[in-house]
Image 1: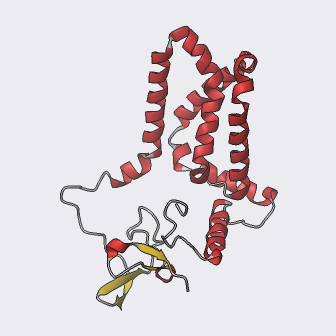
Image 2: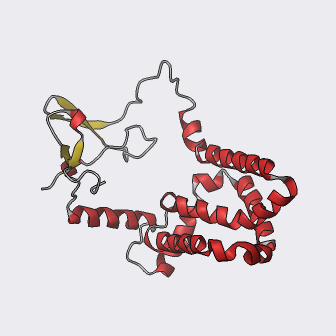
Image 3: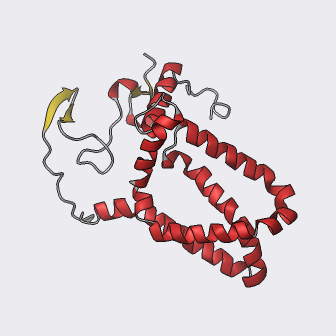
Length: 226
C-alpha cells in the first residue's frame, strides 16, 4: 500500500507493531508465550481439540483423511511426472506451515497455509481421478467439499444468531455496566463481558491507540502516534 499511495500516512509506531506481535503470539500459544515448544505444545493441543471448527467437522475430517491416504498411495506416480515442476510450491507451503506453527499457531492465522497444504496433498489423487472419472466430476466434488467446510466453519455463528429475528431484532440483553461521557457520546463499560465476538457487548478498539484522520468519520482512523 505504501508504494502505491506514498502520500498517505501509513506509518505505525514500531512499539505498536511489537506490542501487537507479542499479543498475537501470547494468545496463539495458549497463554505460554516465551516458553519452549515442549512447554506450550500440550496446552495448545488441548485448545485445538476444543476448536469449534474441528469439533463440528469430525465426519468431514474423516473423509479428508481418507482422501489423504489415497493421495499418499499415488505419490510415487505423482513424483515421477510432476514433482520437478511443483516442488517450489510444496517448499513454500512447508516453510509457511513451519513459520505459522512456531510464531502464532492458532488455526485462524495458519488457515491459508493449512488449506494449501491440504490441496497439495490431494494433488496426486486428483491427477489420477482426472484420468479415470474426468475433470468435471472432480471439480464438482471439490466445490461440494469446499462448501461443506465453509458451512462447518460458520456453524457456530449461524446457530448463535439463529434465535435472533433479523427483521424485528430484539433489544440487547441487560448487562451490568458503568457509564461515562465522552463528548456527546455515552460510553458503556461492561462489568462482566470480555468484549469478545458473540458476546453481549461487541468488540471495541482501545480508544487510546486510534484517532480520527480528520474532522469527519469518513476520513477514517489511524494509530495515535503518541
